[in-house]
Image 1 (cartoon, helix red, strand yellow):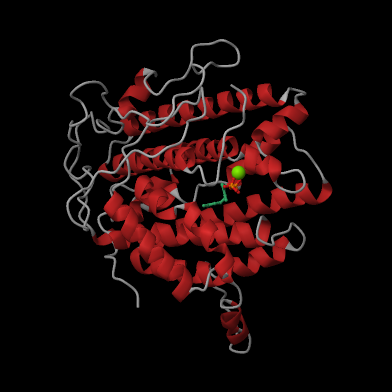
Image 2 (cartoon, rainbow, N blue to C red):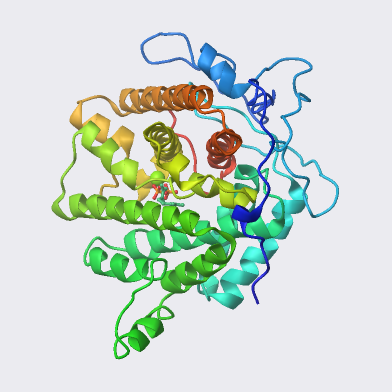
Length: 420
Ligand SMILES: CC(C)=CCC/C(C)=C(\C)COP(=O)(O)OP(=O)(O)O
Ligand SMILES: [Mg+2]
């Protein structure tokens, strides 16, 4: 039985905020756990990118930091909604070391009450509703910590039902990646056909009476399709038509990225660095931050989403978050069978750098993308200070920070190379 999430496009818009709208976006938070073994240094000896430094534009985006600013209120409507699971709780800080020299923003520990509830519900969904995995994969499902991930990325979700929209989609997206493309039986061979048929679970096939029934049956025929269909079914009920269309478009982008990666794997081609980065703009987390408004219970109208400056902000945010994955999953991917492309590997091969220097260059590329995202978001906020635009920008920035924190703290899945 589906839980009811009110359609976000019916929600009242938040009132117009003042010019300091992004104040308190990144209140001061100290990263717990062991300190880096050496002070972060950039490869070329330039000043390090610490969470505290930044340009005027970045300061607009980040808001004030320092003593007394943690409680700076967001203007009405931008304040995160209180959790529906009782009083906000605090959790012990999680372990995990940040990549030295990475430019990122620490986040507050995700609400543990919500994390527990989302984790409970997502496991029920995976096991009872979509039969996602055989028993022997349960440890990996738990180790993925998707509840912590989504609660950290969507602190403004009004209810746990809203959080579940993002959590189901995240699990389904990873099921397709694992089972069709990568670790759990995936292969580049024949990927296009599998992906296209799975895509019809999120973007329905409209056909004749004769051919509709076998298509409908096919949607239950493997775990990735069951997961896509069910997660999308919940999402469509909560989202407006343009939000649904936006998600389908982003997923088509993602599938195109998977196909380019697979084609290169099949032929053993190592792309140039810019070509790799272009592929990774599609094989990318983009579909996750772009549902921030649906998960937040409001809607960024289609014409504002389509603006070229908004598209640039979204692309840069997606690219920064995805290179974060390349950095944290580097050692995991080195251990995987065959050559798994990621940014440090491609730089080392194409630019004839040592593994360490290539990794350090990848950090610099990430940092430039993250700074460019923040600058573009701040410019857009100034050019178009409409409430849903401001809230959406804040939601995307929060997703970027939460994504970094999940990678940093997911020591079950990721470990850093020994370069420092
Ligand atoms: C959640 C989502 C939209 C995923 C799509 C693509 C994807 C799995 C990533 C961007 C993560 O990269 P990667 O496949 O390298 O993941 P791991 O390093 O195996 O965690
Ligand atoms: Mg990776």
